[in-house]
Length: 369
View: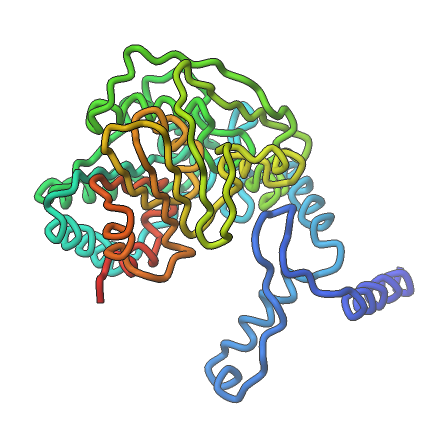
C-alpha cells in the first residue's frame, strides 16, 4: 500500500506540473483562477496563500472527475449539500441564498432612489425574482439551514415604495403556479418561469396580453446546468429548454454593440451545442444589446439586468419600439449616457435575488459621478 500511495502521489504531482492552466471551465461555466503573482505585500497579509490555494483547487488535474467522485461519495454517505448547492427532492438542485452585505445593499438602494429622483419623467420598474430556494422550499433537504430571502425582498420593496420605481412582486404568482419554474440542474428560471413572471409584470408595465397566444417549442432535451457541474450532483440529469413563439411578432434587429455584430434573431442556436445551452437566449450575457423593432408606439425600454432577463425580454418584443439591455457587470460607463443616446422613456431593473443582493456593479453604473 505504501508504494502504491507514493506512486499515485508523485503521478498527481507530476501531472499538475505538466498540465497547462485552463482559463475557463466549460463544465462549470466560469473563469478559473490563474497563478497569482508573488509579492511581498501579498505574503505579509496572507493574500498570496489564499489566492494560491484557490488557484490549485481550480487547476488540479482531472478536477471534474474528482468533483464528481466526491459528490457521489457524499450522496452515498447521506450528504445533501456541496459547494453551495442542495440536492433537493424530485431531482432538483437548489442554489443556496447568500446573506447580503448590509452596507452594500444600503448603497445599492440609495443609488436606486437617487436614480429615480434624477429621472422622474421615466417610468421605472423593479422585478427581483425569488430563486428556487424561496419558492421550492418543499423540495429542500430536511432541516436544510437556509437564509430567508423574503425579509430582504420586503426591505427593498419598502425602500422603493417612496420612489418612482414600481416594484413588481412575483412571489404570489410563482407560489400558485403549477409550471416548472426553475431548471432541475441550473439556477435560472425556465422559459415557463419567465412567462409566468412576464404575465405578472404586464399590468404594472402597461402591457395588454389578452390577444397574444404562443407556440411552445422544445429546442434542447440535453441541457445540464451549472448547479450540477458545480456540485457534482445529478451528473446524468438533463433539462429541456423551450422557446415561445408569439402569434404576433414584429420584425426586429439585435445589435450587440460592443461586439459590433447584428442579427435578425434573439436566439443563438449554436449555443445549444455547447455546455452553456441557456445562452441560446441572446447568445448569453453582453455589456449592451440594442433591439430595434418595427413597432411604432414610441416606447423605448432600458433593461438593467442579469442573465434572468435573457429569457424574459423575448416576451417584451411585441410591445416596444426599442429595448436596450445593459448588464452592469460588463458595462463601465453610466446610465446617463445610455438614456440620452437611446432616448429611453422606461426602465426595468430585472435580477434574480441571489445576484441582486450580492451585486456591487449596479450602484456604480447608476452613479453619474
